[in-house]
Amino acid sequence: MQKYFISEEDFANNRITSDDVFHIKNVMRGKIGDEVLVGCNGKSYLVKLTKISSEVNFEIVEEKIGNHELPISVSIYQGYPKSDKIEEIIKHSTELGATSIVPTLMKRSVFKLDEKKKDSKLIRFQRIAKEAAEQSFRDVVPEIKDIVKLNRVDFSAFNKRILCFEEDAKEGEASNFKSVITSLEPGDNVAVVIGPEGGIDLDEVEWLKSQGFVSCAVGPRILRTETVVFYVLSAISYEMELKK
Amino acid sequence: MQKYFISEEDFANNRITSDDVFHIKNVMRGKIGDEVLVGCNGKSYLVKLTKISSEVNFEIVEEKIGNHELPISVSIYQGYPKSDKIEEIIKHSTELGATSIVPTLMKRSVFKLDEKKKDSKLIRFQRIAKEAAEQSFRDVVPEIKDIVKLNRVDFSAFNKRILCFEEDAKEGEASNFKSVITSLEPGDNVAVVIGPEGGIDLDEVEWLKSQGFVSCAVGPRILRTETVVFYVLSAISYEMELKK
Image 1 (cartoon, one colour):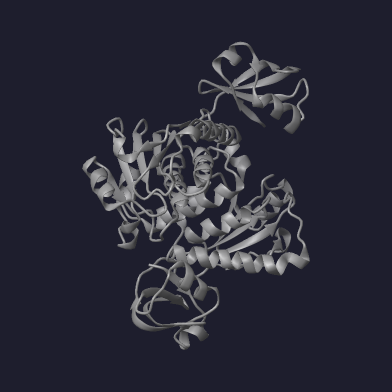
Image 2 (cartoon, rainbow over the protein chains, first blue to last red):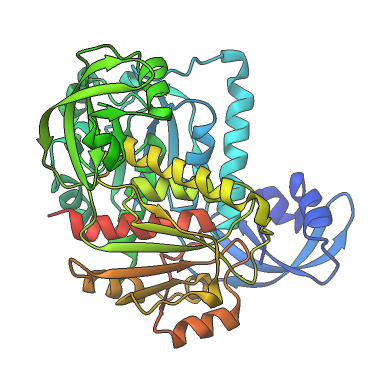
């Protein structure tokens, strides 16, 4: 069943607006009486469509109780990668349960920020996250934060800090990541730092360690930057959400 | 350091041929005396370049001992997805340690096989796997098998059989996957079946269950087909390769 995240204002008015109207009409070929899921403020509702015009109106059938969120908050500080890989990362990280994604400029990021294009980029990123959250039945849409420089980030709000560092993988380090992940408890607020294609500069590694980050290898193979975040989020889900 | 997988014949002749020569010359800007890694027959060697012309010659410096392979064999039967997602799946599954990847036609695969293009497609897939294996420091290149129909597959060689089924995720199933993964032992031969975009048809699910497959949800969110395999391989690596 298709899900649409809508604003509080639209929810209060039992309506769906914006791009979602196009989607209901032209992609889903929606008809009056069809049921869809509506997400608002962390809650999900089964609704029935009552009118389809320039906006779509609905009546609520029932609230759907169900938890599709990780029991912890995970913020991904992703070293800004080449080309449009950041979009792939936003899409799949959303499916895998990330709470927020922060495109982060690091020393070895090749990407050059064009301030004029930044706002439209962030709007596009947020739309990718919304669509991926709808598709994966998330209860909330992850927040895509403003592009930041790594050395300007204040990590004080996080009580667990994970640095994924490929040099550790090359040296056979194999216990730090699992030690951190098995120590996680519901409600924890976790920061994960992942370098761009060229890896994290050693000065940055030292600074992150001084900020309390635990340097971890995610398995013995050298993963591409976009694959690291899939590993991290999958392992968190596997450890915390699945039972034997 | 760059790695190149070469044939036994080339290894016996201390040479690198084919596309890799272009890569050494034009991408790496290789010079005589440079060191690279050469992979052959599951072993890795540090070698020094001794001549660069239409082929590249080398002398062996030392064998590099190190294990970058999962302790089990994992064959991915991936429901053939839309567009070029199969290439993304081959690339990242290789990084994450898959032993073989089998593009599999299932009832809901939209992809139509063009027999005339099949051979060039398979050559391209195998090249993607080779490059991803080099980049991720694998000891072997996964085999990309011929495109098959699901109902023609003989799964008798596998002693563990995992079916990733999204309806289980919708119904809150949360223990089968972890039960199977924690039961894995080194040397196991595992088959993993993943549906295409539209999911696995119920007839196919029943047939797979009759073949001994355990139907599993991979977390409470509905993952895209290409994300499922990342979750499965990451969880296997996390469970078997990392220590607390």
